[in-house]
Length: 337
Ligand code: P6P
Image (tube, rainbow, N blue to C red; front, side, top):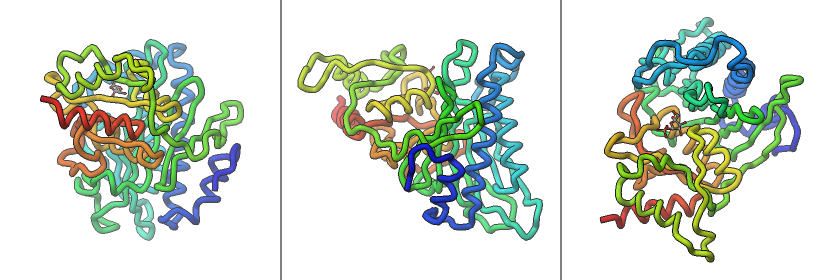
């Protein structure tokens, strides 16, 4: 039961009993993410005033220039999750391999793992455009009390127990699901508390916003090209042409589309044969949220959360948003010559 304006802490306690995972550990895990997000938010909001923007002079496993704030956010989330003695392993976009966390209390065998994109869209930091953190939570599949293994992280998205994001935008919001709908909490920076501002968020079934980097148009599969042309056609009864909105920050584009209705596409292309977004810590958590909000997420042909992962930083094509818009893209992909 969601009561508008209750704090995130009250919401977690009130819904604790409905969590399928009654140990209370999941609540403490969400709370630790909430804390880390507050710390990162403090730095993101003053980026530019301190020497924390710009490139850190290193690249991550993706071959992308690491931004100082990327590294800062990564360290803060890993530190907070480790210190709270809740998880047994963490995988991060900014870490080549997963991190094993041995329980500091041999009687307390942690059973959750977290996969995280600590600061998605970080190339926008220098130009003051909103960025976000994305997280995905699973129960481990290997025996409790033993070191985590790669197979604990390579689980299908349909096994997630929780997922969410923090969007550092005009306000800072934590949006998450534990499989019982999607709720959004807005941070009141004056007192450092999150308040339930968006209870039970649902994607409108249809939308009139499409988000894609059209600069890659020439490299897209024919089905995507045909769909983009469909969006641009004049058809009053369908409210077409649609509006093109692309922030270059997945969390921000997703969040706007979930509130207003719309679709986000990062397809494969002749430049990115599997697309750009990573399955485990970008596509699966956003797909879980999308489906919990009556939306849909696919790679253009099949459900994102049914994809069998093969490696930690695996990329997949990503089509996500209002259900009927994603279905329309899938129709174009199936019929394209
Ligand atoms: P492009 C940010 O790097 C990101 O992972 C998403 O947040 C964003 O939607 C996309 O990549 C932007 O990529 O190639 O259009 O600049």
